[in-house]
Length: 92
Image 1 (tube, rainbow, N blue to C red):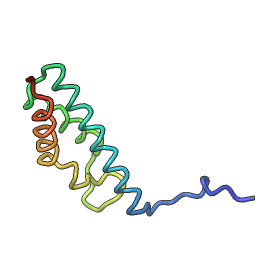
Image 2 (image 1 turned 90 degrees about the horizontal axis):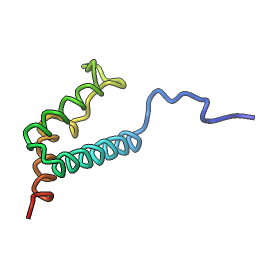
Image 3 (image 1 turned 90 degrees about the vertical axis):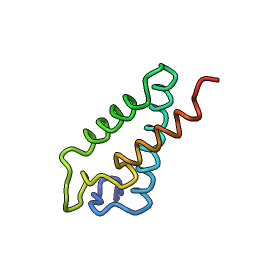
Image 4 (image 1 turned 180 degrees about the horizontal axis):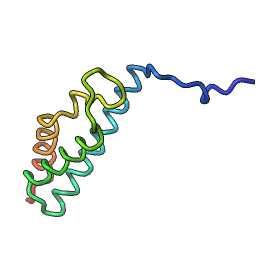
């Protein structure tokens, strides 16, 4: 009897990478919304979320592998996400 979950898949899949990026983006959006509701300034929220992502992908790898930071989680992408989230959660 074979157990497919016991077979290692070191190559991953494009679908899996896209799913992980979408999940990480949702998590950043949720955290940015929480910071907005708590009254944390957007610049501070951006700095903290960028530091969190940098920690998750430390040490960075130039040759690929599990620690390669996706372009969708760059510092600029995080700053844009925080800006959009704060615009939606601005006090009225």
